[in-house]
Image 1: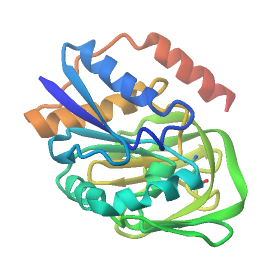
Image 2: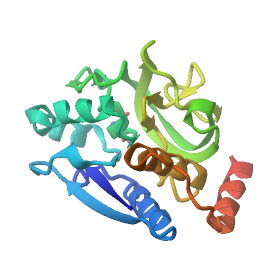
Image 3: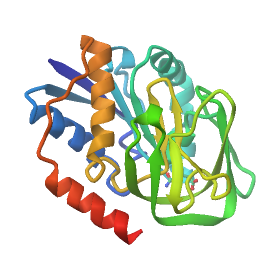
Image 4: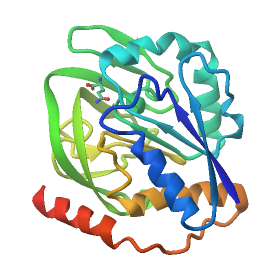
Length: 241
Ligand code: GLN
């Protein structure tokens, strides 16, 4: 068995060690005897998303989000939309999460028209939402409790065509107002959690691996791993936040 993991825009969207999420996935697969191939697709890459079993897009600042717009609208947008509708699991963080919505308008009125693959939009606010935070995923998103770190000025508002990834237990999440965090649509999960997210949230890491394996091989069963160290890190942060 083998999963093809695509890392989209690693050259511009990779804040706070977001790429560590890919390392977590590949290790957790190999520990179970499953091969993982990582395909990096920076700006200008011709690599097609067609063979992707799992896609990761990290976070970036307003500047980087503007830099990639031209490349995005040269065909990546259509590919991403097609992969999403085809049930490919995606994990997208902060700026990469915002990119799947309709648009991001900065606090000073600069607008990035994104790809509208998911029903939401983001508008910048004057104060940044920064700090460690925690949330509980919905049952449909695996139900695990996540510890993370957020740093964004964008306030995301979800439309009726998508579900939140979870409910905020402490911190801001999508907008600091409605208690929602992230987005969930088909097998796509967007979150504001940098850090990286997956090493200290192994249940959520496995949730996406399981979806990818089920989609490719018809069986998403994963052998259990010894997660004592990961869970100790998770539980310690959960208590602190
Ligand atoms: N520029 C976006 C915001 O501040 C995304 C930031 C990020 O990815 N950390 O809302």
